Length: 164
Image (cartoon, rainbow, N blue to C red; front, side, top):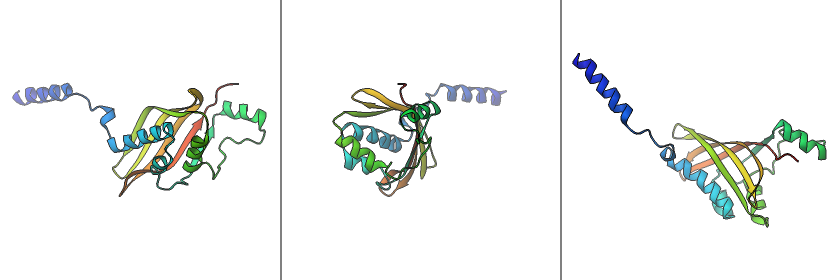
């Protein structure tokens, strides 16, 4: 009977412990996410490119079906998931730095899965230009832990455009 009572107390004690705060999980990886966000806001090309294993790391976008139909009205040859070698971190940040518009990317529902050496980061994103949402969707990164810390190896994202 004492063993059952002790087990019950142990379960109650464990249940009373506060749940681990998701914001403190994987702080080094979350720092990469935050640095990505702030380097866009601040148009900081060197800091942005330092987040990647290589500045020309491939990115892949995929248009939602509704967005693809919308784009095809102006560009009939548009593809749902066309690979473009120029779609990479350097091209992205160069466009932001050169733009007269302010740029921001927001992240919600950030999820991290890691074994300590490789990681995936997935989240809902919105991209804003001058405070107006230009597109949104899901974004996923693959990262590796290098001697210099966590680095993004590749990035994929869906694109949903506002209806015209």
